[in-house]
Length: 255
Image (tube, rainbow, N blue to C red; front, side):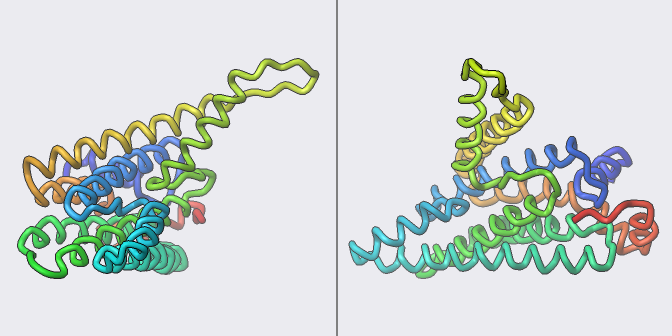
């Protein structure tokens, strides 16, 4: 791995957190989330990062007795929850051991799962095909959604566009409000810019995911997997080579 990529990855997914690289990590994850969300919908008919929509869809399908889609919806929610739980367990295990890879371990797991999907999901066909694809997609969305909540002072979720759009609207309301009293109302323009960028990148990821699936099929998943693994492997390798503990002793443990 090129030295500059390794250094950047250590800042992106290592234990020393800064606002700049918190945002860079969120930018990467939100593009991946948008792409996986679109691929899931094109292939299965479910937005695999959108648990509100999945829940509503399951309710609709119960009424119409479409039990296959009801099962896929329930499976989506279960595996999303399992992904978020796994992130918490894996991150807490790494933090308690003061590992450089406490964040990167979660990303590596996500990258490997996406890579395996890209390699093998296209070979699966027939009954149960939706379950094969939906389960790992929703699991990875739960993983990354929970991971971003572990980053201090960065209250966004990479798959939750509704919440980000709501926050954008709040800041826009503050921006256009004309102060007529002594207590001024000011918009957080920095927050507005970051959230707008995240929503835009989710949209871009969706477009790329759909076009990529049309051109490459499920092999498009391997592109996202490689990006995540490039971002996460240097801290993991540092720990594997026995240097993680010495590195983290110079760093305040981040929660």
